[in-house]
Image 1 (cartoon, rainbow, N blue to C red):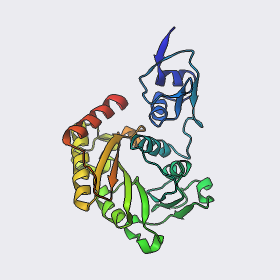
Image 2 (image 1 turned 90 degrees about the horizontal axis):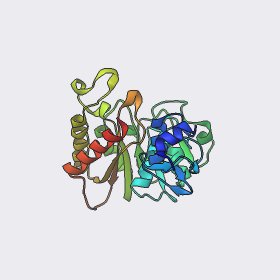
Image 3 (image 1 turned 90 degrees about the vertical axis):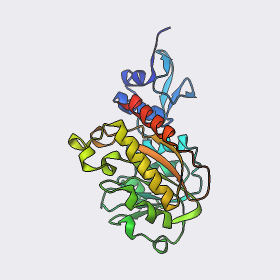
Image 4 (image 1 turned 180 degrees about the vertical axis):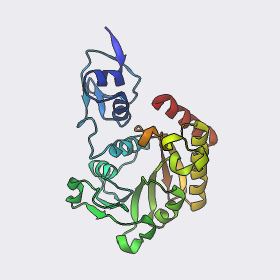
Length: 267
């Protein structure tokens, strides 16, 4: 019985348009082999196995949903009933994913205009806060402290956003932030087309964000890499932060292992 890597099988059978998309779907927990979820792209699978990609090859209004889907699964987060903010909502991939996983209400915040998918604009669970800079948002504007927040911002460092987000959080809240090396590293460390390929720079950037989060009063609980590359092929990372005292396990060794795994999987 012949076997093949799962990501290759999804591509050759037309269930994903590319190996990169196949890997993203697998790591997001959307792929089932003979009824069993498989979350490793390199798993060898019988070429005659029954393959199912839950929903479609994305399952969300944008591929951003795949990023949050992996984070929710990896960090084991139950979204049921949560009131949250999607900061840097754009089309609404994170918002869509959160709602599909049980979120009760999402404040979709973005400085842009007209980007949020129509299906989300018309969803009564979504508060569309376009043309809104997160640095100007207050609890009074929201009318509630948040159970949860996601951050996916561009052209600005997380160090400019995290303190404001913390001020919006309930005591039990957690945050998932997307770390984008291309917007955190010094200009001299960013290559052509805005791509940061050097793993050592990734480690440096992640370490800086973790240290800043600690100084802000947020506890880094876990770290993984995004299953989907950013624009121009940048590898990005997902960090889980707590707004309450808990075990801080993100050592330099853990960071290095996550970066090595990311480069080995996505490069």
